[in-house]
Length: 191
Picture 1: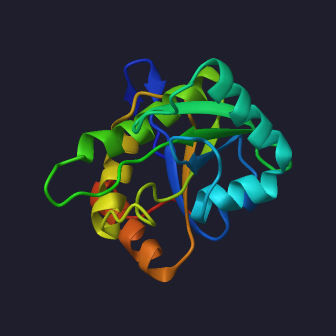
Picture 2: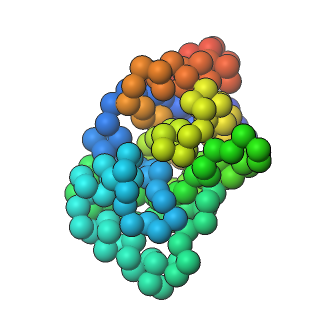
């Protein structure tokens, strides 16, 4: 069910959905829903740092010491080694904290877009994304899924497959609905 639609110089990518552990994905890039300090934390960030081992933290510390002394701004992305993960690289991105008073949709979309741009610089063919900002940052799940899928579908990228990796049934249903709403055949490609 791959979509091979010519867009400019790039082919559209295949979008798949997996309910499972993002740290177990055999892909070129695993995207980390990081905090600005790149110091690890809870949720996806903590799991990636724990499973990936000290090489990821060491790479993040070098980035903070040299290129990002004030931290990684929300909506931006940067790559490091994947350490002990089965992936080749980790692309760290910072999603925005949800606000009912301020529309931060553009920042969340930027986190996905910038992650794909970094993946392109690595010549990555496969990228696994979590539901950025939908956990501790409080973004409503259905809206987070919609923004993620719409942004990825619209991105100009050389990435061949984007895999959304979610833990629970509610997230799976939200991403299934978002993928179906944007897919020509109404279905995600089998994961």
